[in-house]
Structures are given as C-alpha cells and as structure tokens.
Image 1 (cartoon, helix red, strand yellow):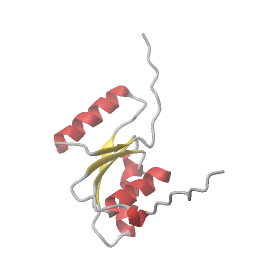
Image 2 (cartoon, rainbow, N blue to C red; image 1 turned 30 degrees about the vertical axis):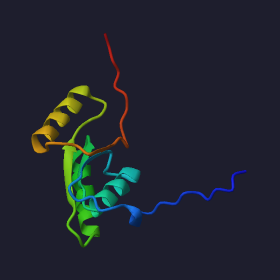
Image 3 (tube, rainbow, N blue to C red; image 1 turned 180 degrees about the vertical axis):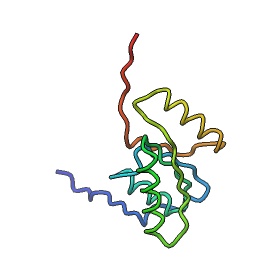
Image 4 (cartoon, rainbow, N blue to C red; image 1 turned 60 degrees about the vertical axis):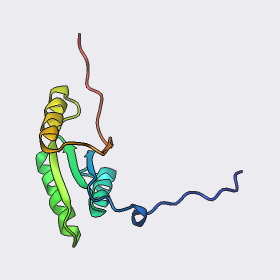
Length: 115
C-alpha cells in the first residue's frame, strides 16, 4: 500500500484561461458539459463540437444563464461518426480561428471504413 495522498483537483484550481481557444467534443451533456462550463468560466473561448445544433444551443443557453460572468461559447457542427462532417467542421473552425490550444476528445466514435 502506498502512503502517498491522492492528488486532489478542484475547479478553483483551474488557472486563468483568457486567450485560450478550446474545442470540446460532446460538450453539450454529461462530463463534456461540465468541462466546457469550467473552461469557459475560467476565460477560455470554447467551441462545442456535436452533431445536434439544437442540443448545443440549449446547453450554451443554460451555461450562460448559470453564470454571472460572460462566457465565450460557440457551437461547432460536427458529427464525429461522419468523416465528411468532421472535415467540414474543421474547415469552419479554421475560418473562425487562427489556432487551437486545447482539444478535449470527450465524445465520438470510430466511423466505419469501407473499401
């Protein structure tokens, strides 16, 4: 048995992320939602990559309503099971931003490849 104390990390430990550009896949629900909310709450510009614009926009509205500070949140239409959709989403992102600092692959599945 190790006598080391478990490492603890809290949302308050996240540093100032002003100027950071982040993509979170599946950031409209579950762990991705909380990840997105915390990153944006600490100043990051966060793009939520997901296949349902309706669910992403609803999640963004809920996140913004839950905080008194302005959150820099944006939808990014991308179905991770469709490589054409992924390419279109990446192209759209590159038209909006000059760089990506953090990519959090919270959701997705491997598409089927056929020869």
